[in-house]
Image 1 (tube, rainbow, N blue to C red):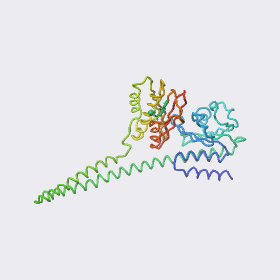
Image 2: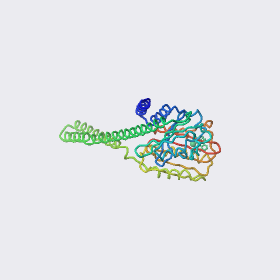
Image 3: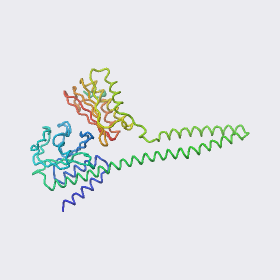
Amino acid sequence: MAHITDLVRAASVVASQTELTSILEAVVETGMELTGAPFGALGVLGEDGSLIQFVHRGLPDGMVERIGHPPEGRGLLGAITWTDQPLRLDRVSDHPEAAGFPSAHPSMESFLGVSIRIGDQVFGNLYLGGKDGGFTDRDEALIESLAVIAGTAISTIRVQGRLRRAAVLEDRQRIARDLHDSIIQDLFAVGLTLQMLGAKTEDEELRRSIKEAADQLDASIAALRRFIFDLRPPVWGTRDLKQELSELLGRLAVPYDASVAIGVTGPVEDLPAELVEAVVQVVREAASNALRHARSDLVSVSISRGVDRLLVTVTDHGIGFDVDTTPRGMGLENIRSRAEAAGGEAEIVSKPGEGTTVRVVLPV
Ligand SMILES: Nc1ncnc2c1ncn2[C@@H]1O[C@H](COP(=O)(O)OP(=O)(O)O)[C@@H](O)[C@H]1O
Ligand SMILES: [Mg+2]
């Protein structure tokens, strides 16, 4: 049975990936291979159901840029998300909810889509399209199983991530405790011994060198204490993103006529300090660009906390600019390098006359 060997191979390809993005890519590629579809994509959903990551294969070069934005999770995609049944169509246009295909979308006559779940949580949607003659019962069964494999692989990688973090945290705490309980105590004891020796001796010169040694020891103990302090688990350093953004944007907007709106979905009160720092930097650059260059009367900043990533967008409806030909300054470069340094990605979409959106996805 080709069926089972195909799936076993798919499972091992998907399960051998060690990064979430590679899993997503392997799932899309495997889905295309299993069914012979020329086009495949996978959308990852945030907690509020909005699309926060989009992986695709088989779209002609430049198509994504021409469409301008990934699917918004309405229409067909929305229809798949909320059911655990696959959706199979010979002609996409037959479906009552297929309202949302942009005109530049490749012709995708046939369609097969399924939601990817982890337990009862919807992680995203896998969809395939454009297969000549339409998808078959066998394709549908394969893709349903692939979605289960994908869900399992994704939840495994998440658990591994959590365990790794827990292990690092525990290690740091253990080292800090060890340093404190044994090494510092021992150094104290040595210091006391030195003091006693110094008090006993009649030799002035010896007493002076003992005193020097004791002082050095004190300095080392102080340095160790600082080191232990730095070893405290990173979760102790959290910052309130929403509050910091309100303050920042309030300050930035003062000299301008534009209003600035902030929308936040999901919990962002206790994010790691480094992550908050990255978001604040990105928003500072993008919002000041919008205020300085865009001539828009509204700048919107939105933060959406997904299961394990954070989506940050800064949008204006101002004059826009040509991303390909406008010389990049430090600002746009900073946005990109900040996002990448934090393990994420930045995307800048702008159309002259329509406005600009800076979109950054960061892992949490
Ligand atoms: N939101 C925006 N609206 C219009 N133009 C923008 C916007 N953001 C950036 N630009 C254009 O891109 C250029 C580069 O931006 P940036 O790298 O931040 O450098 P700088 O702001 O120092 O000029 C800007 O000079 C401007 O022409
Ligand atoms: Mg700038």
